[in-house]
Image 1 (cartoon, rainbow, N blue to C red):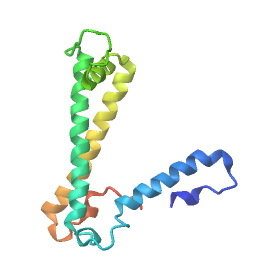
Image 2 (cartoon, rainbow, N blue to C red; image 1 turned 90 degrees about the vertical axis):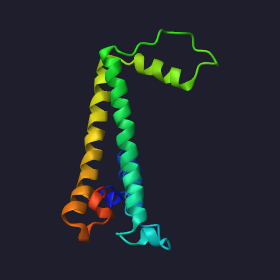
Image 3 (cartoon, rainbow, N blue to C red; image 1 turned 90 degrees about the horizontal axis):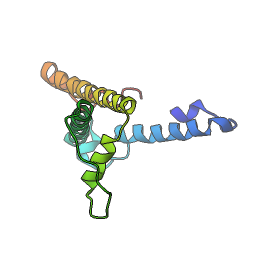
Length: 151
């Protein structure tokens, strides 16, 4: 457990301890530890576990692909929205586009790198599952996504 890395007599490590607690709770969710009584989630081969993990990875992949495309179009100057006064009638999409257009080039480059990293991370995890499905289907489980391999 991450919480065992820090003792309570280390006050300067309090922020790291809070982060460690959060990571432990995320790992608990990814391990499906609180799903007793739901037969689709109790077993590692349960379809519920596979469905949730694949949906999460697919949504993350899609969102980052759209963001990458948007950031790249902004970087290339292919998206241009003339600046307008922000009023109560302006839509959320207009406000978001104005935020994207006002990003500095260094920040835009970091955002592009993050989206590429996230895309390849999702592709890796989905690829691990699919390669296990194709070449060794008898051992395919939700752990084949390799999302929670550090526990």
